[in-house]
Structure formats: C-alpha cells, structure tokens
Length: 447
Image (cartoon, rainbow, N blue to C red; front, side, top):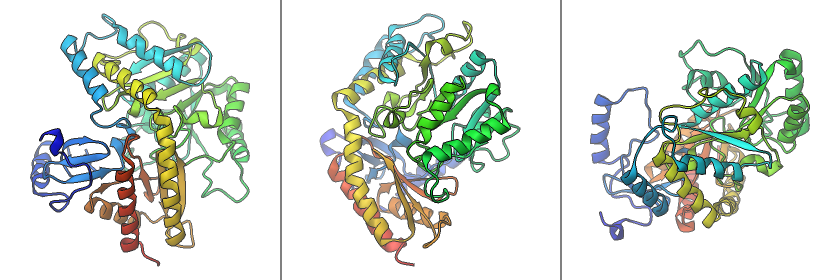
C-alpha cells in the first residue's frame, strides 16, 4: 500500500479481529508457544501516527505504543533512515570483540540526559529485565552486600532474578520457581489504598522502618524502585515518598536504582520520571522508549559503582547492537528536536480532564492517575475500593472491538492504562477518548 493510501483515522471494515487476522491466528496456534500471549489477535501490516493498520484493512487507534516503546512512532522516518544506513555498513561485530563508535555515543548521550552531574558510565543490554539484572549485579559487586529491597506491586521482568523482584504471581511467576534469594519486599506509597493521612514522607518512613528492622541497612546492596509503577498499575507514590527514600539511601550509603524502563525517555513529561521530584538515583535502568522499537536497554550511573566491576563482568553478545544503537541515536534526536517531553505534558493536559469527567459520571472509576502520557483508570465496585477486574476486561474488550487498543494492568487486574505515542495527532487521541467514553456509557453504566 502506498503512503498516500494509508488511512489517517480510525477505520473499521470488518469485525475485530477480521478474517485474515483470524486465519493468521490459526497458523499462530500451530507454530507459536501457547505461553506467549497477545492482548488482541489483530495482525498488523503497517503502523504509525498513533494508528495500527491490520491485514484486513482496518485502522485501529493505538493507545498502547507497544507497552511504551514506540514513543516516536512505529516507523519514524529518522529512525528508519538511521537503521537503513547502519545495516548497509554492518549489523554486528559484538562490542566485546571489536567495538564501534555508536555504542560509545549512546553512552555519552545517556550520561548527558540522566539526572545528576556526577561522573557516569553506562553498559548496554537487550531488554529491561536484562538491564535490571545487571544493575543488581553491579550494586552487589560494588557493595559486597547481598540484599535487594523492592516494593509491593513492583514489576521488573521475567528472568529468574527479575521474577523474584516482581511482585505479581500470575502470569509472571506462577510455577516458575524457585527464585533467586535475598530479595525483600516492603510497602509502597499507594495513595488510593493507603490509610487516610499517610503522606509520602510517612509512607517512606514505614518502608524504611521495615528495612531497618527486618533486613538491616548494612546488608542492603540496593533499593530498587519504579518512580511510577508500570505493570503494578501506574501507581504514582505520594509526593515526598521518593525524596525521603533517596535521602535515607544517601545517608546509609545504600545505592538507589531507579527502574525507568517504562517511565523513561519523555513518557511522563520529563526525560525521566525521577526528575519530577528532583531525585538523583545512583543507577538508572532504561529500555522500551530508548530506540524507537529496536531492542536496546542500558544501566547508567555513578562511575565508581559501575567501574567497580571487573573487566568482562558485564556484557553480552548482542548488548548494544550497532543497529539498535543507530536507532537510539535517531530516537533521542527526535525527542530533542520535537520536544517530546512537552508533547507528553500536552497529552496529559488533553486527557486528564476527559478522564476525570468520566470518573465524575461513573462511580466504577475509583481513581484517575498518572503523569504525561502514562495515565490510568482504576476500576472498583462502586462505593468501595474493591477491585473489579471483570469490568476492566470488559471495557478493554469493548474498546478493542471498536478499534481502540488499550491495555490493562495492576496487581488486581483492574487498571485500564493509556500509553499513546508521544507523536499521536490530537484528533486521533480525541477520537480514542471519545470511544472510551462511549464504552463506559455502554459497558459501565450506573450500577
């Protein structure tokens, strides 16, 4: 299909999924592992500008961005051009064998972009889980300690160690154990569900008290936290929670790792979510939005921590692949040139009033929260905080049937999350919100 023939708005010509997608799904069932799920079995042919074009000719509004990955779009011209140029030169040498400048240049960009003026180093990997695991390796090696502190509702990945770091059993951990030891979980600030009057500072004191009493600061290699939780339900800790936690880490010389895999690269209206409260982590983990859809991840942080690891202790065959590095360089240029942090704030300003208006009409919406283009609705039984995962699933399915891709999340499966591309046209975003309002009227009417 020529670019001039690609629809620029939602368009449904078949049921969702359509006959060609259903045929492809039958082939998938015979070839792909059953444990690999999909939110919506619509097979995509082309994508961009906040729209997904499927094999049946339907055009769906994308409010998921491949789980916060395609922030600059699914086929940003600058990224596509950089990838094309790189693959004509070389696709791989392995940086650990014969290095190349683009790896170094990405690390230089990360040192410039991440919070703090201290000397920094970076190591590049393939996925968020791999980067989180390496961040833990670094802190354990540098401190000589073993314990890692994580939080209720956290999600950090699917490897053995990151499954141990992750809070939710199903589908991430169920029957995959035993898991890595020396992982300790403490309470998060969860404003919707915390006791009345529990400020961010008091919630931090609650978590710190548990660390001191049950683990001991002298045994802690790292405190690992998502500044805004992702899979856990887009939980935004109360103001003061993160700064108080960071203060304790500094005083007790415990490295603070910020998992910004989902929040990083302009998603929340700043380059990194920890910037909203001026928190400077010792290590910051990035992935997802870093490379416009190509697999790349990084650990960036204090030089004295990362350089404590012996030569050969960090790396991997594909880590910092040159094609992914070229994509990352182009992605970062697009974010700078188009000021996509501001774009995320505009998306927040456009969406939040609409979502709050929905909440005022539908008592099933117990909370509206998030920052930038990382927004969520938590659905409950009216008049309570009892989660309603069944309704959440019904709302998501109804949106899908109308050609709007939304995602669910949360420990209780009752959070509807919105992650539009940062380059989504305002009209497309408005139509997606219109559909969401229609769905609530139909599926979640007054109860």
